[in-house]
Image 1 (tube, rainbow, N blue to C red):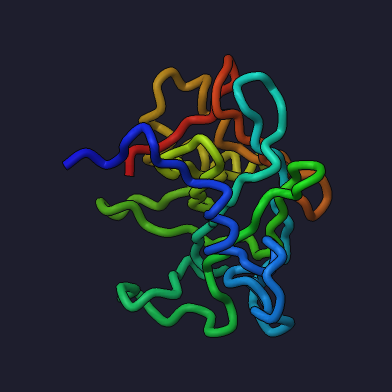
Image 2: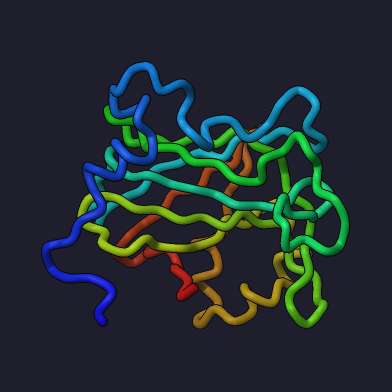
Length: 197
């Protein structure tokens, strides 16, 4: 059975179902994934923000993004985590829409710790990211790495598989103070590397 047909679309209904308060539905409380940290969450507080650009270079104002990540010690808030107990006051998962006027997205989170690759090699700190928007029938998956982790990035097993290596830069967020800037390009010469997961 095919995964999609030409009539399927992810939006605008994705906002009504996934971020109803953002979509203007009142009385629902905060949208799931809106807050990832509390004052008690361990780790370095960071902001990750950016834009999702279409093939013409225009920011998408109807995209929805989700991130998954390890806590500051490199542990996941998941029943499948067997290496220890993740920070109980960190969700490890966030969901944010792009701003309807500007197209900017923003996550308030913590810098993740390193996690092992299946063969035991350590991966560089990263966020796993999924995005959907009108016209994107199947969600796109990618990762966000951090420019100030150059040594760890150089040994990351996933980054080492990207061919040509010059495209690695499309997965690296630049730091400006406590904020990492990560723009996503759906097409064009600077197209972000997307993962087949």
